[in-house]
Length: 558
Image (cartoon, rainbow, N blue to C red; front, side, top):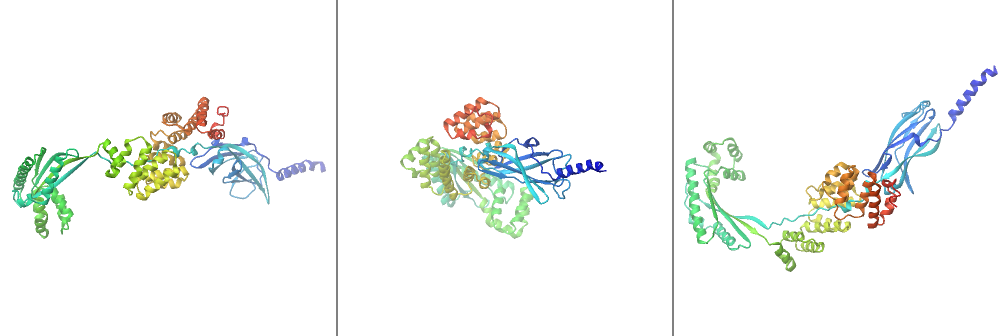
C-alpha cells in the first residue's frame, strides 16, 4: 500500500515545487524588433516588439510586467509596460498558457535625445506571484539609434529673400474729360479752358519734352453718348463728339509740335458707364435699376423699363446721365527709370535720391555681400518702415552661418510687417535650427508665397517624420536638407546627385554622402566622404564613430 502511494506523491511534490519555483532567464532569441536598429523619426524613437514566452515557462499563477527600456551611458528612457498573466490569474491582461506558451506584440516610443545615438534596447521583467515580486535579468533585443533625421541641416538651408518691385519702365497715363450738353456735340470754351484740360496739355507737353525720363506712346479719344434717346440719335451724337474732339486735339498737337499717334473711337450708348455710376450712387431703387440692366440686353427695352421707374428717373436725368455725355482724353506714356549705372552712381554719391525700390534693386547689381549689407543698412535708415531691408540683412546673416544675428534682423522685419510671408518663413527656419518644431509650424503656416518657403517646409516635414512631403517641398533645391530628406525617403540615387550638385559643400555635405555610401553598401564612398568631412570639421570623427549608420564600416572610417 505504501509502495503504491509513493509514485503519485513524488509526482505531486515535483508539481508543487515546479509551481512554486521562480521563472527563469529568457533568451534574446525569443524577441525581434521592427526596425532591427532603432531610428529617430519625427523626434521620436518608435519600435514594435514581437516576443514569445516558451512552452512550459509561464507559471499559471504569475503576472509578468514587461517594460521596454532604452539605455545609454549615463541615462535611460522607459516605454509603456505591457502586463501578461498566467492561466489561474483573474484579470484583463493577455493570458499566456503554461503548456503552449504564447506570442505577443507591443509597441514603444521614446522621445529622442542626442545621447541615444549610442544606446541599446532592453526588456525588463517584473514577475509577481501572490504578494511576492522579483525580477529576472533584462534582455537586450536591439541596438539604437540611427539619428539621420536629427542631423542639423536646417542651418545650411536658404532663407527667403524679400524682392524689390523696381521697374525701369513704368506705364502711366494722364486723363481729362470734355463734357457735352444733352444732344449737342460742339466743344464749349468753358470745357476747353477747364483746369482738367489745362493739366492734361501741360503733362503731354512735359512728357514730350523730356525724352530721357519719359516716352509718349499715344493719345486716345473715347467719345460717348448717354443711353437715353434712340440708338440712331446717340450714334450720330457720339460720332460727332469723336470727330470734333479729334480735330481739336490735332490742332493742339500741331501747335505744340508734338508727334504722337492719335487714336479715336466712339460708343453710341454708354450702358457700361451708366451701370458703374448707378452702382456707386445712393439712388433710391438703384438695385431695381441694376436688375433691369441685367435682365434686358436690348437698349430700347432697357431705356423703356428704366423710364417706368418714375420715382427715380428724374434723378437719373439730373445726376447720372449728364456725366456720360463726354469725350475722354487719355495720354499714355512710359516713365523711364535710372539705368543700372545711374543707380550705382547715385548710391555712391547721394543715396537719398533713390526710391526704396531702387535701393533694394541696387543690392541685386552686386555679388559683394559687404556692399549688399551696406545698401540694406542705408535702406533701413532712409526707409525705416519697410520690412524688406531688415529681412534681407537677416538673409545675408543666415547664409553666413550666424543664425542668432539673422533672427534678430528677422524680428525687426516682423515689427514692420508681421504678416510678410518672407519674414514668417525665415522665423520658422530659425525655430527649426533651435529645434522648436511647434513654433516653426506656426510661423510656416503664414509663409505661403515666400520664395524659399518650400525649403523651410521641407525642414519642418523632416522633423515631423513626413519624408515624402519633405522631398516634394524641397523640389529641385540643391542643399544638405534636400539630400537629407531624399536619404530618409530612401531615394539614394537622387540624394547622391543632390549632394554632388551643391555649390559650396561643407562637412555636413560630405557626412551625408557617407550615409548614402553606407546605405548602398559602398565602403569606398563611406571612407572618402568621412575623410573629407573630418578634414573640414574634425568633430565629425567622433560623430561618425558613434553613428549607427556606420556600425559595419568601422575600418572604413578610421
